[in-house]
Length: 253
Image 1: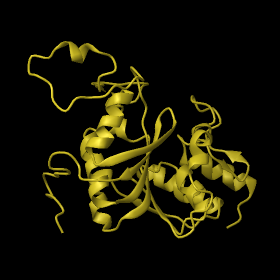
Image 2 (image 1 turned 90 degrees about the vertical axis):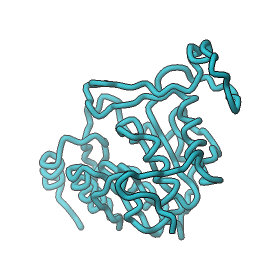
Image 3 (image 1 turned 60 degrees about the horizontal axis):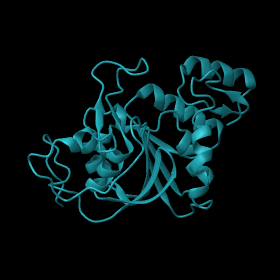
């Protein structure tokens, strides 16, 4: 559908504020973004690791926001792209952005905790910039692994603390104390109030924590093409009992 420049500007203003800075027919949605031209600057650091031709592939974009990554997946020829977010405002932005980009993408209002309701698995799952906004981050990873990740998950999270990683032992004695003072030991820092003025920034992991959580949820880390980005494969079983969702129970079908 063709839109005039004035109409696009009017719709961008009406749907704002935008977190994704996107260029819609030459008009930017968030030109003054505090992170710069985001998420394009992030995308350019790992886009080379994604096949240029995604024909025949299905993609689930969890926490799609305004749909930047969903659109990029469709532009690479993915057969089916589904973007989900619990925020109706972001989904309105995403639908408009996809319309302007002439991309056939489905968007649904859904929480990561309810991905089991989709009843299908996907070749590629995008889980970008969501983990630290969740009250229950490991549960989210478990649910993704159990219900929707058929093969590859592309994961990104904000990190703080040490970027060093060391080999963890299978067990530690009860009287071990000094280990927890090491900055590279897996740490998930809890934010009680706000970080960067955002009350939904609950957790900030260090690199060791991210990698340990991914392994614990049943993902094998394939490549680490950018400081915050991991390409993982669903492999093996999650540690412990996997995804236990108190209200709905486990999906053992």
